[in-house]
Image 1 (cartoon, rainbow, N blue to C red):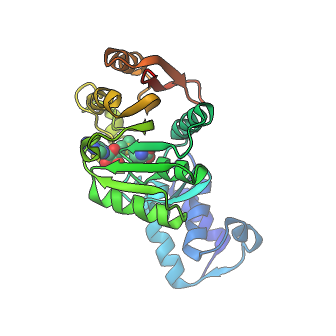
Image 2 (cartoon, protein in one colour):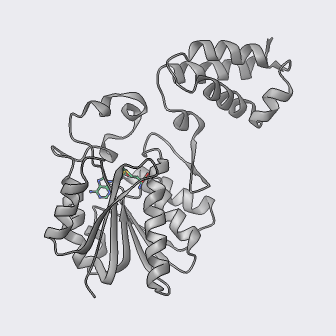
Image 3 (tube, helix red, strand yellow):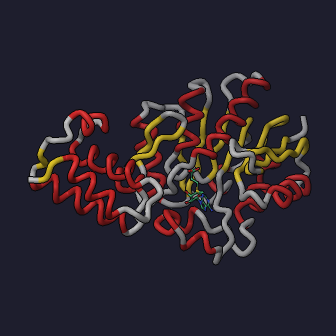
Length: 281
Ligand SMILES: C[S@@+](CC[C@H](N)C(=O)[O-])C[C@H]1O[C@@H](n2cnc3c(N)ncnc32)[C@H](O)[C@@H]1O
């Protein structure tokens, strides 16, 4: 039988390629045991059942091969809510919380009641669920092209008891007819085709359709910019996430489509990550 402390030490030794080897080893053992991480420290001499030891070994082998910890755990926190994730969806990133903040700030400032909010490319549903959770009075619409991702987004909404989201399958504004919204948010695919980042680290396990934005990375952003003026209510805000070197290009797309008050915003790390624009009143 293997003790907890010995299993953790052996796992850490196998995870040398991970910058978070200790944390990974603990998270995976805690998940395999269905215990809190603190339990591992309280009971280092506890012995693992052979079945647990084998399941842990398999998970450590997958992590050592580079699989993202979020896929192995099946979960990732976003906006202090736990979202189920699978290889069908992008793993929610902390910087994307900036889109949620921008949308909430605009709704607060504009004081619209029962605001209509649109999330394009909802993936795991993290942005839509966070917004619907914060603003139970909002009517959120979440669009997604990938069926398995849409199923997971629905499951995440149910998990958090959020009932004010309508999910739509389809491409960008396609399923929406002439509907208009007070806020449109999107974290679309924006990585250039062939960018070496697509083949590196955790990213290589994520769905290419969630990442690849075409030759210049701007295919989806172009469609969103072109559609936004036709789907924003007067004074409404569109805010998108993009690569840190795409701010000027996205601002030019927004201005070119007649959006006003176009601004690029920094994320928590000080990188230009979001661009917003408004529909005139
Ligand atoms: C970068 S991921 C963002 C996922 C999630 N919103 C987040 O922030 O973690 C982009 C999402 O857009 C979806 N997508 C790609 N092309 C699309 C299209 N034409 N119409 C709608 N969604 C699309 C992808 O399937 C993916 O879920």
